[in-house]
Image 1 (cartoon, helix red, strand yellow):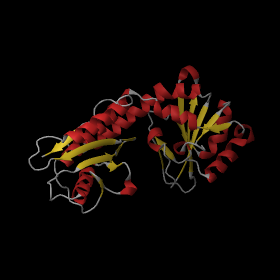
Image 2 (cartoon, helix red, strand yellow):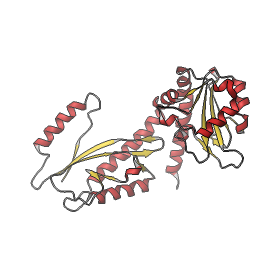
Image 3 (spheres, rainbow, N blue to C red):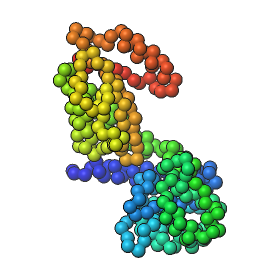
Image 4 (cartoon, rainbow, N blue to C red):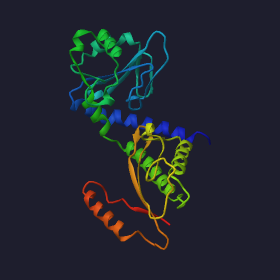
Length: 296
């Protein structure tokens, strides 16, 4: 049946949000003494937390600013509201309204500390524009403006405290990348294949899978360096540092390869010695799972 991958990604991201809102957000808010979290979104201004919060801006002539409001209601859990031209998952966001309802909404709940998406240190928590801030200030009034704090620490705790559904999603994309990198290495024909050949082939595989590279502005990457017409030769030692984007995750995986010279049956002792010494320097920080792919 068509569309199964699209549905799987939608359902996975939906599950992650619910788990995070139920299991992580209450603790993150309380640990940072935050009673209410307001994330200000605007039409045409993509926010870095859009996938985390699951709210999209709808085109509107009369309203251009959307307020995603998450309020700690104690034993009742987190109350989720969207005011303005935004649309969120109705299973998460039980309250909706106009952007001009913000003042009355905040006053009724009377939060002591309100976290908003402005931060000097954390770009992902700094998505509010100047005009968005001015509208927020006008709508909530001086009393509550004095209670505004940066959402930086809250966002950090909310994002780094992982739930099981996130681990499952990340494991999936890490395995997809591992398989793709090893398949790419094994396509090398010594003396024939160029970096550019492999770089564009990998890019095509990503398009077929509906994925993006982790660093789009750099363009396609290839084992051993950026794209060039350099031909892979026997005796080359290749290092490939690469990443993919999937849902709300980004990978960063390194894989290495050695192309055997004529008559060689294994990696030269010198390269193996250096490799083993390098592993000893990192095994205290990372699992001992790196290996060299031998290309024959």
